[in-house]
Length: 227
Image 1 (cartoon, rainbow, N blue to C red):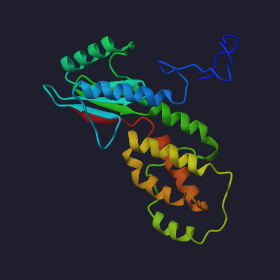
Image 2 (image 1 turned 180 degrees about the vertical axis):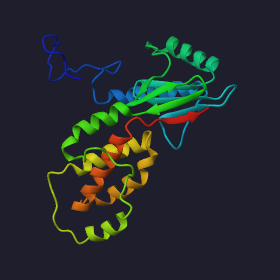
Image 3 (image 1 turned 180 degrees about the horizontal axis):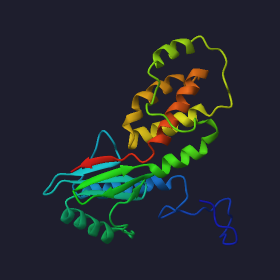
Image 4 (image 1 turned 45 degrees about the horizontal axis):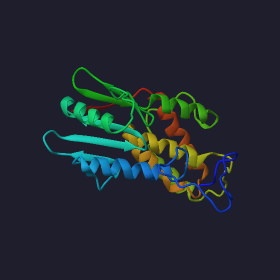
């Protein structure tokens, strides 16, 4: 790296600094940290998932799952195994233990007394509804798509008028993130909407408004997981 201004030694054009550790904020820092945490978890007996490289699984003794997103690490398993893993992690790295999981990547987690876990994105959905308020129908609807949406799709193929100011891609992307995390009820609607990313016709705009309005009416839906 370049020598810091005011602390130059010799010719700054010839002499550079050699980093012994990566600095926070450098573009290569996330990659360096990922290599470090990956090596640590593999040495601890975890196996990296082939389906998602951010997931690690340990099957020795008690089953333990670890999810890594940059420097946010969550662990799922029986309490003794989780506590032992977190202790080893604290001993090896300087970390802050956040306690029971309540919030992760825009998803709220509620651990219920009946050993179920409720997930919701109410705050995320409310934020997106406010962001796209000028383009959403008011009042909400009860179904993600109109019952005759296939007929409307056929008519949409004949449409030539497009509204270039409509944030179609942004709306579909926002709906897709909600769908992938906690809202499988809009899966079919998002699949239909995604067909028009390159050429969103007027009818597709209507679908975008309809799906956004569905989230408005069913804002507080929870996804419950039984352990």
